[in-house]
Image (tube, rainbow, N blue to C red; front, top):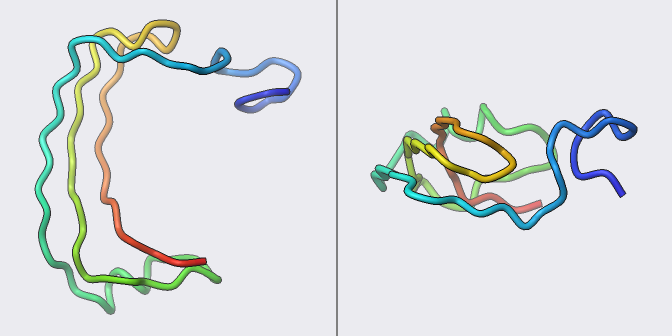
Length: 78
């Protein structure tokens, strides 16, 4: 079984992944419901206007290496 694409040569090794020494900054806030809903693909529907906005620095993620990421997390239903 492959855990990432392409299936015959996966980009990432098999889980579990171990994150060491990471730093994450999160803020929970309210966002414009219409703007959030417009960003969702069908058939997802927005459940709340509360979102988490985050930035994360991971200097050692084992086989995943070192990386940084950020994102917006919203509660949706399928």
